[in-house]
Image 1 (cartoon, rainbow, N blue to C red):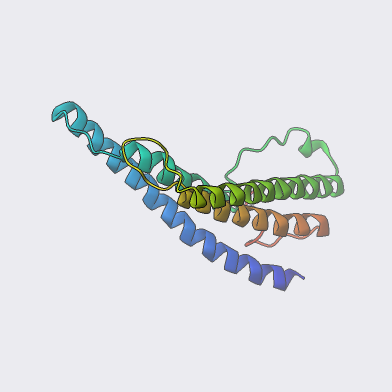
Image 2 (image 1 turned 135 degrees about the vertical axis):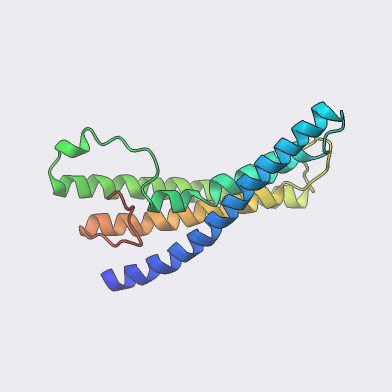
Length: 175
């Protein structure tokens, strides 16, 4: 089982790495566009139309959802381990597996709920209502992709927690 999980984990790691690069580009785009927009607004009294919509509808969603699984794999999410440290290792594995499975279900719920929202936004040609009419459905698509990627990473990790194994490319580095 470990070799199969390792192979799946390596593929998932490559996908996460690609999406994390996109998230990095998104944060650079956010910083650049907001900075330029601020300078143009206060110095030349002529801001760039649509910066707020691009940041809120696309770039911030890309930043969060395309990097969330990468962050989890690297052990970057906040964890409270005060009680965990006092438990026997078997109980720690069971609890980690259980909570990871619950988190997996939560991210699946996020993804499935937003598939419906994305379909509705696409069918209705929904726009955010700002200065520029940009469609909002691509933001939902990014959210769905990121949520499913996180759910898959959590599912693989929970299987390994229950099995008492650790595979570098599947469970968080901090585990």
